[in-house]
Length: 245
Image (tube, one colour):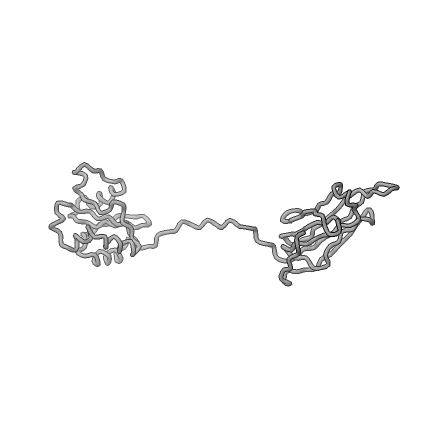
């Protein structure tokens, strides 16, 4: 049989018992200890012959947020395991035929249990869905447009921005986003390739500008701005931090 689980005394309240019976032969025994939310108690039922246990009917109300199960108790007597997750008044009742040599009559008893304390939290509550994270303000999507035919003639700092993995790593570390394929050789389509759709707005923005070009758009969405490609990685990062949408 399940055991009682004592809870904090701050959750405990008094318990009231009202027993009504059409026959004094059935008795419902409520534990004398106070009953708290979430506490499992054993309710003893006496007066019903063991061979009549299968004929006995038990119930309770209200039945929302409760655990209620008849079991075979001590000394081969009927018992009920009960627990409530919500404070309130609960009625437990038992009905069973009482058979003697002289007669058969219907026995009935009921008891009221008052459970107090704070309601138990729902088991395994579903956590709320967190909102989609919003990019911080002042961060940029970045595209660099250059011409490979002129690459060898560019200053070393500009070549480093175009070729260097270091610049890409520092860009990401600073919270900016390099658009996929965003270091774009303007001569590439002439070699049989195609322009990714994600780059078309950036190429259009610097169409009439002198290359190489640094193109920026806010990660939150907005107008594309273009700048002459800075002459060093540090200068490029400084430009990104100071640019305004």
